[in-house]
Image (cartoon, rainbow, N blue to C red):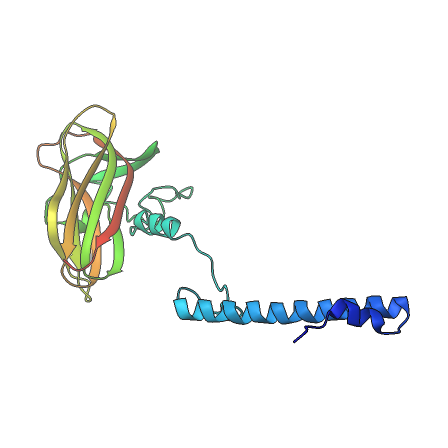
Length: 232
């Protein structure tokens, strides 16, 4: 069987030259449309079969967020309002978020941070007269208390943590949780971790240990409390 030559057949058609060009162009256009439909259909089947990503047209971008930056922000969050001692209004007895101590025991002064000067030691079970920072409504888990302080002069200072019940009663978790020994004025970092067994408020409070001399001081550059793990 002789296969007809489509070019010869097309040449026999008595149409004007322009019409012949349009006919060839139309045929090519139809072939291109059919090819595009085949490629699109094949591509859609391939994506859906692989299951690695939605088919074209079904995926929508809702939010772009850099996860590592969010993690760093949460890790560096200070749960103690005022623990950076940055906001101290003129005439206020203490920075915002800090409960000032009884001035008969110690006083707070502005400086490169927050300077605390003691006139006498403080009883370990009398937290009401001390400087305090409070982190409210914490869930059970593991926490880290961190203090950046310049070494005390004239005696040792203890940084304790207390738990506060719903009725306001305070009970020490560890009243000598971090101890800052006398030393040079260079700032040092002190940190320890603890486990909070049940939800509640944590109060952080420094106090002078017995034997401290009058006018002894320590400079608090920051006191931070951060969550480092789930339930212990």
